[in-house]
Length: 59
Image 1 (tube, rainbow, N blue to C red):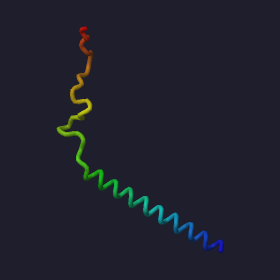
Image 2: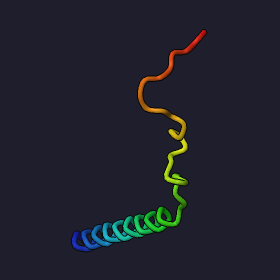
Image 3: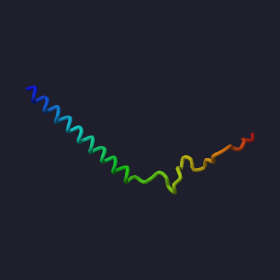
Image 4: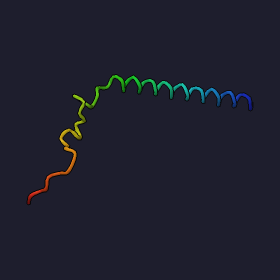
């Protein structure tokens, strides 16, 4: 019985490994098919930020 349980554990471990590899491949393909966030090479979160000293705020 001990041998059977060891084999079962190993099969379960291999099954989980295969499922994990399949999920990785699926995410890899989904990521490649997803359109890029950067349209025109500019990140929309920082599109209008000007580097350097900022002008003083007038109240």
